[in-house]
Amino acid sequence: MKISASRAVRLCLGAALGIALAVPQTAVAQPAPATNGPPRGPMTIEPDPRVQQKTYAFAPTGEEMKYTLYVSSKVKPDTPAPLIVALHGLGGDSNFIVRGKLIDLAEENGYIVVGPMGYNVGGWYGSPLIVFGNQQPAHPNLTELSELDVMTVLQIARSQFNVDPNRIYLMGHSMGGAGTIFLGQKHADYWAALAAIAPAAFMMQMRQKDILAPIKDAKLPIMITQGDEDPAVPVVNTRTWATAMDEMGMTHEYIEMPGRDHGNIIWDGMDDIFRFFSEHSRTPPAPPALPGRPGN
Image (cartoon, rainbow, N blue to C red; front, side, top):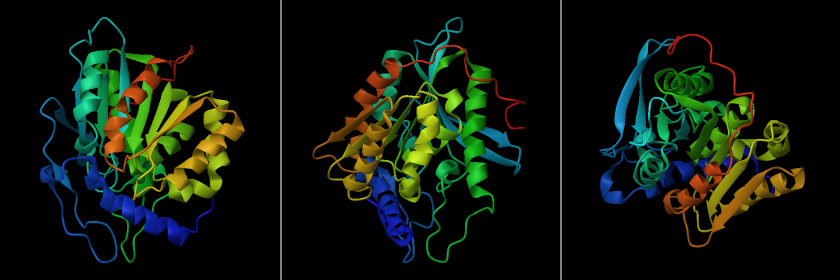
C-alpha cells in the first residue's frame, strides 16, 4: 500500500493525539490539541516510582537533557548486563514507555533500561520529520539532535554500567517505533535486536525495502507488534512492513493482536518483546566503542 505525504501527515496527527491511549486517561495532564496540529506542549504523566529521572549536559546546545533510567536489582557490577534503549511516542516523554510492564519484565530478567527524550517530544529520532501546518521545527537540526541524544544516552549507559555489548536492544512505540526502524538500520552494528510497537513510520513507507536493507544485511532480528484496532497507526500500514520483511527473507516476527489499539498494544505485546530479545544476542565482534565522553 502506498500513501501520499499529505495522507501520512493526517495519519501521524492521529498518532500524536493517540499517544494518551498508552496510559490510563486519569493519569495524563494533556494540553488541548491545536487546530493545525498535535498538542502545543508536552503531555505529562506521573513517573513510575521505580524509575530514576536523570539529566546530562547536551554539548551541541548547552541544554540539560532529561532521560529515564531503570536498573534491575539483579544487575551486578561484575556481570555484563543486557540494556534496552526505549523510545517514547509523539507528544510525551520517556516516562510514557519506561514504566509498568516494561519495568516489571526488566526487573525479572535483569535488564538496564534507558529512555532518552530524543531532544524534544517530537524529534522523531532522526527519522523523517513531519511538520504540522505552519509549525516550524524547534531547531533547524532537530532530527540530527534527536538522533544524537539517543546515541549519547546509550553512550552514558555503557560508560556507567557493565553493559553486555552483545545484548543491547532498541525498542519504541509509535514515533519511537519509527525511530527504532530508522536508528536500527542506521546504527545496525550496535543492536542485538529491534522491537517496533505500532510504528508511525509513514514517511518511510514508500522506501521500505531500502530502509530495511541494512537491517537485513546486518542479520539484525526485528519484531513488530501491532493492534488490529489501532486508530492512530492503521494496521494496513504496518502489514506492509511485515510483507516487505517476508519478501526480503529477514529474521523477523510480526505479531498482530486482535482487539488491541494504539495504547494497550504496548503492554499486551511486551511479553513477546522480552521473549524475542532473550532469543537474540550478537555474535562477536561486539559493536564499536562510542567516541568521546558523554555529552561531548
